[in-house]
Image 1 (cartoon, rainbow, N blue to C red):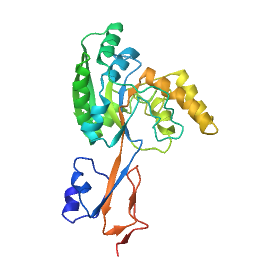
Image 2: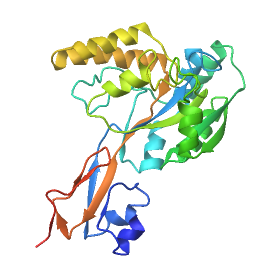
Image 3: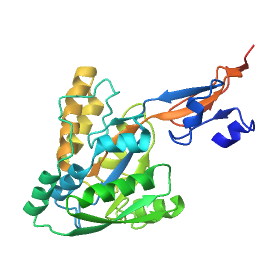
Image 4: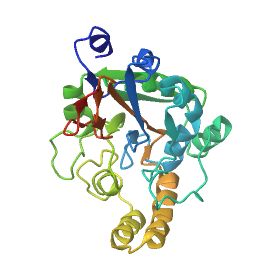
Length: 285
């Protein structure tokens, strides 16, 4: 799409990544829209069976990740740190008192040892989507230092979603045919309800981790019933704490949504969900 713009074939780009779009940032005739969003990747781990059933193993993988390096290498800083939960720092009810998880390879090794795990080997399933294959390579490299050996299985989106993330069968509970370990994409939402209800609530429609936690379910119900920011924030403190401790998924970052258009037009704007609006567009005088 960037090449098409440079060749005067198009005037606007709904989304581009920081690397292919680098020339656009330097183009005086192009307006770049950079939106901080809840767009993120979830590194799911099966919590009901297999090698990641023990939360100490899940914590070890999360502790092996160098999140700062990911932000720079994958996004050149156009992303924000995440803390293995979906309460984005841009939400007004985000609770910053929950400590940010940082890389600690020694602690990861200690947790694996305490769980009786040595020489852990697993397959990491990744879709061919934007930066996700590169994220998989970084996870593979970083986890190796903690004693976790990952083989990457890269698949086209159609195969990945239906075979690894959330197979149609078995139907009950949903996603119970999911692979042991994988990375799935989630788009921006103005509130975390879709993430919490679908991916983490017991028997959620997209619960690839097959996580079931009564305390989390209660905290989510509390959030949904909360009236006012203070009550929402109190519930989010519980949600953040539980997810960070239990690690049904690791979420290393929320990334910016980049789009833009030629300065030959005014009034073109985009949403973080990938929608571009032209109802107020007009040619520049």
